[in-house]
Image 1 (cartoon, rainbow, N blue to C red):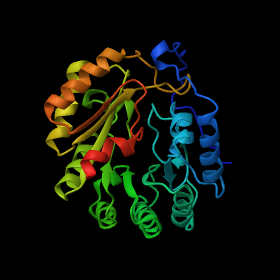
Image 2: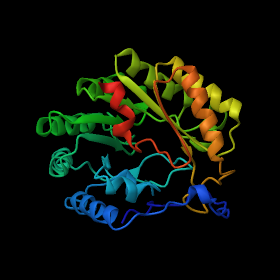
Image 3: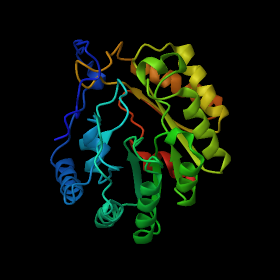
Length: 301
């Protein structure tokens, strides 16, 4: 076992406030349970990782019940230590050379029409894992030519050669999450850079890709700061946006400042549409990949 895996993000221990009613996920049985079990068995056959599990997503059962999942490639240990994220931090293992084929075979078995691929940060690799991404896209499209592929990528430190590898693989949507406002970036994600993320999104947009990003709320941001971030994203070419609630994974992660009320999400969603975003998903339980297939439908037709 990697000795650094799941090491606390901070020495500070804070109590996690109780969730309000609007943050409590209610499961539906028995129909959802059977379908979710099908996805669970399929992704576990070759030890395939999903961000659904690794990031403790609150929508796991709902999304898996729809026979959809977000594959997390390149391992499940991240080289960066963002204070909000529940993905393990430490020294990653070597890449699994068979993973692109395994993921593609899983997608084929589930007959998916829309796949989301994401990964941990792999700063230990010279290309940041971009070639691994590209191979996985190729393998999926080879088996499922009509399947749409969305990539939710790390920033690759904005390296030209890494981004070009992703572009050459021709994903249908290029997604990179900004996660928070500029004023909180150093506190929330000290290993990342706000300007670098904007640079990556602008580059993808300039290369003609439908570009998407996401923000999570409840970490101490103000409405003005969120609106400014939305304007920044729109100006670099982002046209699809997700806005959701931050959930503190453990008492040693970044403390949650507030549970933002549903009406505030509606308000910010309206502002995003007025700014010009063509697709907006804004509510407490929204995550970057939540109903990604539905979010993209009118953009890809």
